[in-house]
Image (tube, rainbow, N blue to C red; front, side):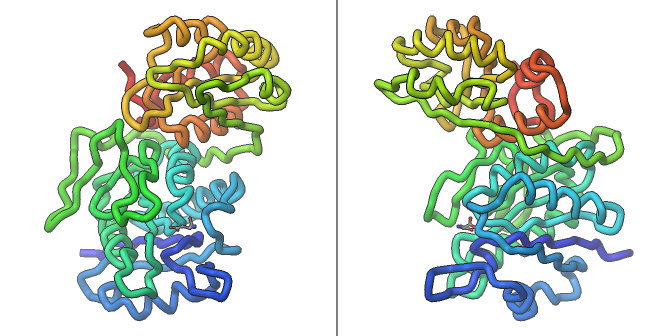
Length: 338
Ligand code: ASP
């Protein structure tokens, strides 16, 4: 039987970083040398793999729409040559990139697994070795045929994942969706959660640079101070509210701002600051007022998913009304439809 082939796309991040005088930094060619020393990757029972190194390599704090599009392009152009793809990425913005790719790769029917590590591969006790080996195996198996994120024994839907810890090795979770698989002695897939094939061919939906903002509500917030940016200057605004979609009642000030922003073509999406649970606009008076002012519910989407979904929908050139409508339905399994 033909050996499965996986393309490993290295974008940067701790996994391949080298210690320098100024701290860890990604260095060209360094990861490929490390991989040659990782004997498991050379075993005959391991899938065939090739490495594609992006340039420049980045700390993921520097990843932008450009890199999301570029990773998407590399997957798209190599789609027929490989059984699956692993994207090595810094952990800080990995959940954003995973969400973005889930929208960019429309009709995806092969695994694209993002992973990285908290400790570089070249260091003692690196978590990168297991994360990489298991990700390549998952990518080769072709069971989770969607954009996913593998980290420390958990395979998560990419657009449901969020970074939960800055220093734990178990750094990611998807609080609003069961894991796609749990990895112990065996890889146990959760078949009822995995995405079904769309049956459509893969289409690359590049994101356009779009002005998006995220505003986190806090007790005593003076919304008036944000009035000057909550205009058509921002096409999409993700409002991180309390609990099920609440803002302080001083938010009365916010409602005309939202109404005005909406009238000028901005879309305001209400997400929750709670990692788990859902926004229900209408459960409380304050949330209901947001809805009547023109805001849409982000339901149980992560901020990462809401931000990248806005990029996606604005890039499609849809009208504000169409974008509002699509924000409230699941396009790639990024939200629960109640
Ligand atoms: N700052 C690093 C990055 O996101 C952290 C990591 O990879 O864990 O690129």
